[in-house]
Image 1: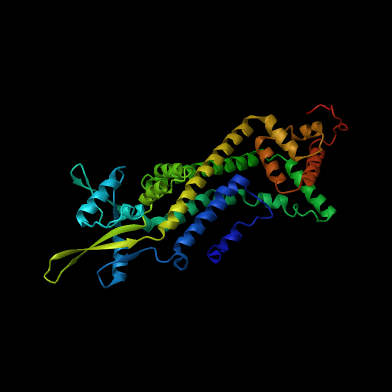
Image 2: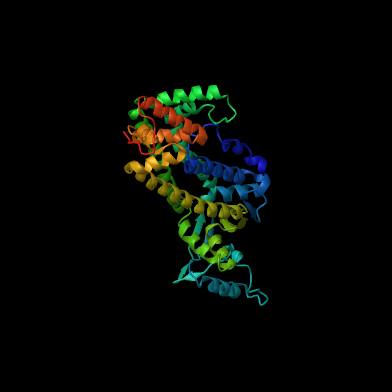
Length: 391
């Protein structure tokens, strides 16, 4: 099974220059890799078998399986809490078997091909299942959607961080070579790139907003795709702490039935239209119910993290003191007054660019870089003291 998803491991390898932060990586790369892995697993017959297996009186089973997969199957609607008791009574009356076991598995009862019940004088409504034909395409589409902000950011970023931070992550690099590169980076930040850095920062925030919107949209999409999936699974999860696995199976089986009915119409020898009942197994639904449960929790987590990150960005934009303290924490042991003089002309975009650079080098190198930036911006400043005035 690992061989099916092994190519994705290269996609998750850390790069020498990281252009995404941790939450962005979870959204764009980890979520995309998970969705692609689920797609590969559901498409691999050698691990989970055929997605559909039917039994029928018809001889051509390939035709039966293909017909039921293409035209769709159905189960009976059993939302009523008392429906199980009614169905059991109807089966006993119809079959008239004294040896019938009342403790027959709930999963089979809820999805048995011949089960019918009467509610308010009407026959129980059929619930047709066609979503399973679209599970793999939907997961594949979701992986592309989640990767879209990362793709856009990679284009808009344009390799700027790679040019600034190349080889600075190597602690064994030659001192002269490293110092020469740090001087070039310091000269870059000493120039006026406020508009460029502001566009850089705004583009990144747009991608973070897109991550939050995509998480919410995918939650709503799955709810529509699986016909009220989230509300049903909230009830199912509430049964887990009480170890009520019968309730869990009853609810999840309604969303992902393991047994369904397929009806095929054909013409008999005299030209009369005949109906052939078929019972079909959906073994992949054992995997689907667990995949979508994980995705439910994962999407909620991604939406929560993205929302918190947007609140953090708002605080960063409107609180200059917070930006200064965060950058001070990165440039360890640098005197307060010296750092404040170096940053007095820095805009929010300049700060963001410096923080991106600091994430791609050691604290010692970043401390050295900030000293070089100070020397570039304040070449005639007085010797640094603890109580020196800023700007």
